[in-house]
Length: 164
Image (cartoon, rainbow, N blue to C red; front, side, top):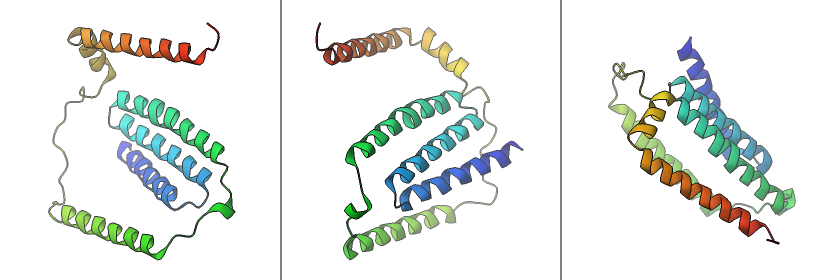
């Protein structure tokens, strides 16, 4: 059952990524990219890497997509402003896609039918183990990084405030 859900989420990720590339409207393109990021986060969670899934949602689907949508609103793109693609750029795109297809076919040619990963330790991607590692072995670099982030936040607030 878990494998079926994984393949459905993977199909959703690939389909929304393809729609992102081929969408004419930039807003629909960005929204499909958000769906792609959430699908990838779901795949991380299904692969027992909860920390990576949460970071994917916070960093990419949250911060980066808000930035993209903000830039999109500020650009105020109209349908009339779309420039016509020239034949050379279309040719280069088709050529690059052909090279990628040849490379993928060459990579998949050497695979055997049942080439799955062997037994994997199920505790590898757990957030609990990452927390233990950060607070036991890497406590000094972790605290230094937190002080650096705190200094950046204070600096951003000071720059943002006009009357101090």
